Image (cartoon, rainbow, N blue to C red; front, top):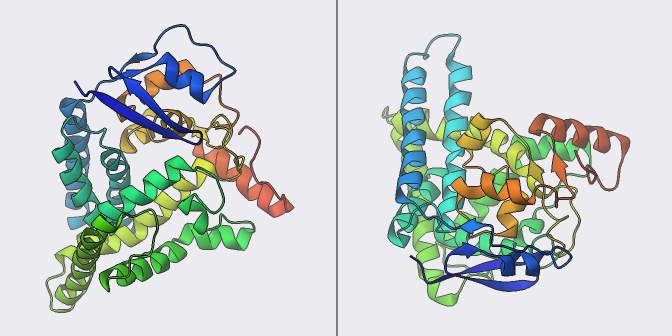
Length: 331
């Protein structure tokens, strides 16, 4: 059993003792709500993490096999998209492991995070610090690093965002900057700068190597990894856009994050990330317990979308009408 966990949220640090998602945590997060008992005992499980990861790897193998037989057929583009969606869904695994909640072992969380980071060209050490800063200051301008990339305010910006072109431009620029030893982000401790530089160089090496090998005729990485990743990234942009777009820019955890109701397949593929308000309320709760937390807290949230299709329909409608606060209301 872990001794204690720190729950980061907009108001500061709440300490959870005895591995419970406790009354103290929720009283501090939601001072207007009085909970008389702890919600449940936290369960960091190698079995749950291993099962989810094994399932994802199995789907990746299946989609790779499907792609292999789709070459030179009309099914090539659909299979490239399917393979890409499977690849970018490993972002959910990266997200869970940088929180170190996917597995009981810190070592295994860090190892899997490193592998997922390289697979997505989002190195884990820098992303962990970036994401921790986002959790400490969600939706706070000047403090939340996610706000450095403004959300779309027009239909043209929406299309550009979903294309993932801004993502890839920023990704390559950041990797290049880090690879040259320029780690300027104040949320990265100085003692981790060397690791950030090392991981950026490895990521760029994988990217460059796959391109060179592809030109030399060894196209495995290019065809089964990099090209599908390009096709899949727009789907991840669509998914992530729902988490905070149009939410209140404040320290209120009931209003600054959106939970999106979705089917079991999306929840499985994305490690229950659609329960995003729950995750921000208690980020130390492992992915497989988020449905349970949702059951306890669902009446608290001010911003809930009925699905990803509904969210994007409302967002496009609001952008088209020129709304200054797109989809701020409950979806």
